[in-house]
Image 1 (cartoon, rainbow, N blue to C red):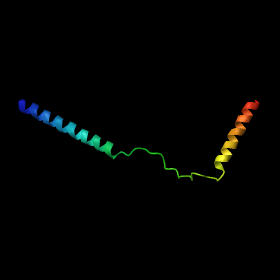
Image 2 (image 1 turned 90 degrees about the horizontal axis):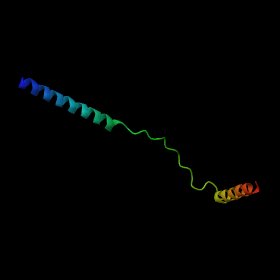
Image 3 (image 1 turned 135 degrees about the vertical axis):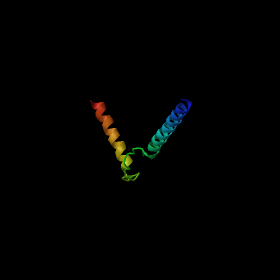
Length: 67
């Protein structure tokens, strides 16, 4: 009876160890889902880009004030 219990204990331990190894292996092999890489845009699109932004912002503020 003791031999049977010891064999069952060894068998259960070996099964849990292999299950843990398999699950750890699956976690290690899974790659995280990353969004696709977007091409980098130039920092300055236009020489007067920032000036245009300023004028747009001023125009919007004026429109809001007129309402």
